[in-house]
Length: 275
Image (tube, rainbow, N blue to C red):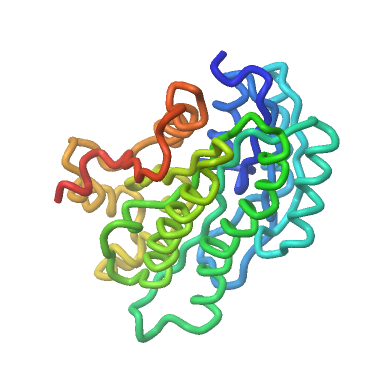
């Protein structure tokens, strides 16, 4: 197991990509500090994870023989996040890996994005990443053994998409944060990279709000109605990837197999950026 004896912080860990990251890291030997808000955010047009979802993540990690601390925390709340990571450090003894995964999306043309929509997306997707890294870095430095920070961006961090200017801005923003931290933390052998998925089959895309955005011509669109549009964005012949496809990239960047890789943007995009 490539991560035996390591401890990883994973945000947005209750379901979807976050749960997949936590489980894959545990499969490779890591213990986990799992964080998720587990309640709705007002402008998000799809249900967010629940406390029960977070507990299911914890059960899956424990079934692999790994330890886990699962905490309901909003990454926008720096004090609560600091406390959760301190609790995890006290319980598990170290922090080696951070996977800043928590993220949300909402949809509207730029002139229709409200101030609340803008603030919530930027605060979760960008400020929340900064909060997460800021809370974990002191322990990573103190450990003296280096480490790996992996920020989950998006193909929207590299190119534009209509009707999601705030999301695109947030995912572009984490690239600048990543590059700056990669330079600052290199003397401590802490590597920092971003991963850029194409569409991933999670609740973020499998929801009524996105169906209606993609098919405004349809009175009651379903996933079957929008799936052909997803096929068009990728070069490889598939509509989306699975969460584990992103998790495999996370595990690679977290492991010593990537020990000299820092400051990069790693697409897992089925060729979306070729278009």
